[in-house]
Length: 219
Ligand SMILES: Nc1ncnc2c1ncn2[C@@H]1O[C@H](COP(=O)(O)OP(=O)(O)OP(=O)(O)O)[C@@H](O)[C@H]1O
Ligand SMILES: [Mg+2]
Image 1 (cartoon, rainbow, N blue to C red):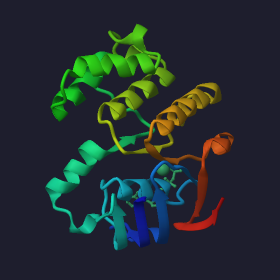
Image 2: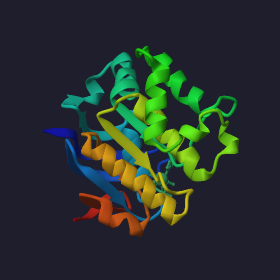
Image 3: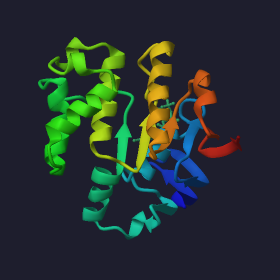
Image 4: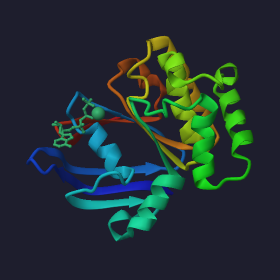
């Protein structure tokens, strides 16, 4: 089953910049897909559109079998909130709240049962049990990135979109984060990860290379 289908996807920003020029792509359930390419090639734009954070200028975007242009604002919000999780390069953690609270707040917003219990389980899985009462500024970059991943896991998403998730950590920590993603992938979560980091290529089940808004190669 295809979780994502893009047909002739184009994106022209309001200032006239052409970011995507006719992308065709299918992503199957269970894939661990890398999106690679130089700065400005359109990786983030592609992820934003798949995640419903931005709209295409032309073409078709189907996510979980539904054309997103036919979805109401409520349906889109539901998609973003419950089915797709986004992990950004910059963590956007709530600075005044502890690690534990950063996760439980998401669970409370979603109305899940026992958000604290679930948050504690996820933080243990992420090797953060010893940091639950710390605030984000008291953490290393890698720890902050793991908290951001923890927030994504609170949603129990089907699909995780990660945009340069290892952009701010050293290569050893980057590898640990990818090993974690692999674990999560084996538990059934599909991943689409944008990165320039060549060292991470062996992790992907498939890679598409973008250049100047087009897919120039797949492997
Ligand atoms: N909001 C915006 N308005 C106008 N142009 C934009 C906007 N966001 C991105 N662009 C442009 O669209 C193109 C693709 O940008 P995008 O951010 O998707 O690239 P990227 O591959 O993610 O790059 P990086 O590796 O640097 O993150 C670039 O030319 C960029 O300048
Ligand atoms: Mg980017």
